[in-house]
Image (cartoon, rainbow, N blue to C red; front, side, top):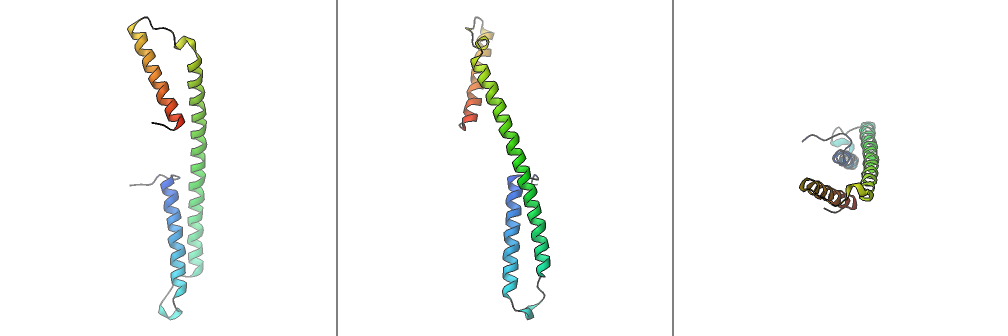
Length: 120
């Protein structure tokens, strides 16, 4: 499964990589020097900076998506409220096709209103 750049999953992956990097550094710093080659602190810091950069980009992408969704939410709410007040859309249906269209419009409004309020 590929991870979409800037997604919450990518954000979590980068956070986990940072955690692992810190754990790795802490574990290596606990060993005596004579056990073997250990990663250089500058290597650890460089990787941490790369991961922090990825985390920042993922966060910025999430913020932009959040803004886009808030704007879409506002637009949808505005249109639904306008239509709810438009008497031309809510007249007494005289034909079966008018009745069907009104029922479907009411159903659509209900679904949108529930989604806006966070209900299913």
